[in-house]
Length: 247
Image (cartoon, rainbow, N blue to C red; front, side):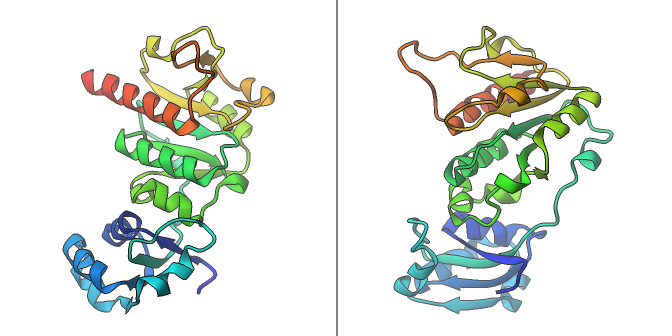
């Protein structure tokens, strides 16, 4: 395996990687059963001819999933990382951007689900802390269900510095907190906005709150303490997407 490469597993993760002309794929491992689907689903027919495809039994492919507790569905691929996105370049001459920011969200399954929702509801990108982002996690790729190929991920060294920079570039920073007085549905969501979500167990860090402009919440049953972070993000992404499509 190359130093810049890693393995992903799962039908959607592998097929969407194969469809993406920007994704460098080194090898694909398939069962005979999954072989039929990969040819039907891929629009990169020429690539399939040149690609190293290995046919294995399900049991042989199980070794790629033993530590993660996930299923490969007969699809495994060795791929390379994308070239890293540059946030400063991305926001130049763009308007009405909505970017999510994950502050210390570390669970690969949650991150994958958030990526899937962000791509589904046309969020423009996700900011993550480079040190906390599990960029080679099979579980994250599987949870994202192929949507890693359809979203801009911005890996940054410091979340607070990035939020400060975005505020200076006319972004409003909205921090999501269960105890906030303001409902997120009352916001118009015009202009450039950052949606800041804190960690799964502790929420936003106190120091990071200093870089927010507003604190907002999702209204839920008063008898329920909180929502899972990925569910919260999906609700917010869907609402903002619907709002933008109406205007």
